[in-house]
Image (tube, rainbow, N blue to C red):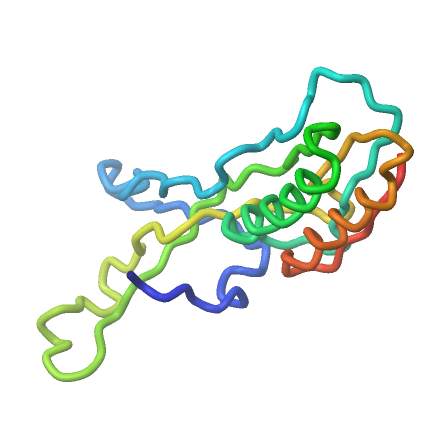
Length: 171
């Protein structure tokens, strides 16, 4: 298994990676979309009516990798499930559409036979990320007013998993 690169390599919001060639056969995205690591986007009991809405908003515009989204979802859902049972509705509001690519270069002895260097260096898909704007809602939590303290704690734990600073807003 290949080790994950540092997030700084993918952090900035740049133009989405698209292959543009004078030959139309090479204009497609090779390799397809990588497997999604986020298992669920809705947790708890969504059918019930709740009287409180908490949202976790991003304070910066950047890419957020899918493993950070899954980690935040698992952390907050675990706390809510232990304390509240199923009396909440947690929803991840962003989807990782942006494909992250890497041109893996071989180094060391015999590397000249394994690598083409920067020739045809479009890269293979290594993961995906959600493109997030400043002030965009990342996670939404609906619950009863009596459980507000637990909900704030769950969202603050989720916010620590993201590479950007986040703010919890009561709506």
